[in-house]
Length: 155
View (spheres, rainbow, N blue to C red):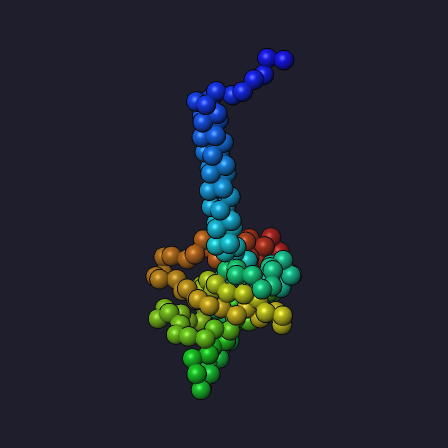
């Protein structure tokens, strides 16, 4: 066989290339892991009621605040309300903190938080639409879908 000792400069080049490949692979792996942990998937009230949303994982839930459903605690900053997709699905949202100034019944909201074992959504953050012309795209899609189904049923 003609295989002998590798020359020093070839060995150094090979080690450099291997180091770069391993380093790039490690960086890509850590980047993807970090991105995966920070993904907040959106779920409509219907998907939450049907059990498609995971419990114990941070997600976003959005819909319209049901009229007459906002209940504020008298002792602290706790508040609970129902969000609906304007069909039959409603989800209870519990939030501890100060709600946005534009939060009110009949408006679209998106809440970020986790589902508890009772099927209630415990929110860390609640976002309300900021003017009459804007609605979060996810909420707009859910509402448009509800209107289309209403038209299809003759409503």
